[in-house]
Length: 576
Image (cartoon, rainbow, N blue to C red):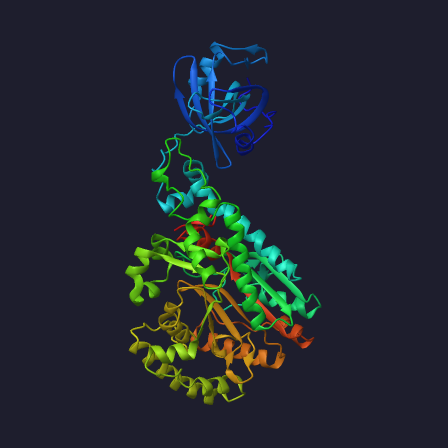
């Protein structure tokens, strides 16, 4: 028999086999129903010299295989039929982890367990390493560093978030295409990294003799396409930020950004809720919505090392009480809209600010129920800051905005900036918050919002009324030009979405870029925007009223599968 045969083709899957023959009675045999099934051996149990039981797994489903000398017909090295001794030798050599090809027919054991009654067993690819026992490979770093081993040993428990990611990506595409968006691709290597306030990875092109950056966001290129007449576009792809690594940050991650002519911020809020609900429904429909509270963990695995997915109704059943309550209150009763987050997941996924805000013990104990069918909450940044600080306003926000973007001299701008930063630093200290480095007004604003606003965002919450100073690409509100037409979506204190009305005035955009460049040069803020002349030239050609929207795909998958660390949902994350 060839050591690595290549001519084996399954005639059915394990899942289809179960569906086709589950109706059989105990001890029944369907000898005329010939099947070929491939899979990985999870368990070998020798009942006697003439009888061996296997547990074989494929695509998250397991099946028992009964191999007995009475049914067996194999082939020797020359392809001639043989039995008896060949069976004994094959079973002696078979080990956990081997890929096998099975020929046989359907039957049930005396206890009623559906089985493949094997007439032939081929080793398609031997497993030549000793696999850890179920429950032994639990270290998150080791699992991420050797993902292939993790997926083999921990089975469907480890595969579920990657299957869910596929469902989420497909759902997001379908939702945006339903809104008339065209999927496009933009450069990953860019001359100027822009579109987000972030530190880029830098490299050099020897052919072009030019310094390049990996993109931190595709925003500027996508808006150039809108200028060119592609009125609604989106891109699902990888972006790169040379920043921290923790439970919700990886140096490379997946984002979705969409831009649409004539979209308003209100339109984007509706789109956000639609995307969230559609993605939750897609994951639930695939039977992948159960999180750590419902998937058996590796240390709770069966003897065969395979964790079977819960039936698709498991999530619906778990969500039924909350769904019924929502229906009684006039909401939809679609259980896919209701996420029952376990206390363990909430305690590990929620931001430290949320857990330190007084409800950490309760959340870790009781978890949290999210109903995506209900309107999301809204929090205004200035109002929330005033409420948290006893009525304090954001220091000199209007004056500094006017000075920075209104054409004031550098000296005048720096004088207002110094006073504003001193007052804002004092406000941070009064709230027990450390100053960022460098302590610029924008960075301190971000630290203040993270400390007093985001902890209030347990359930899906739109955070609105961001200062323009921290939103250099967003339109100003006509009634309050120091604030931006912008929102961020937070859940459990974690940002999932960011959206705003796009600034289309090229002169105003140039002033804002200039202020960012000055911040970089004078204060050493390496996250500030550079001057992007190509983008400014595109704006000069005319950008229609446009709304832009961005989603962190990894965090959405984490939420929907209840995986508390980003490396659980990224197949090959960066490891320390």
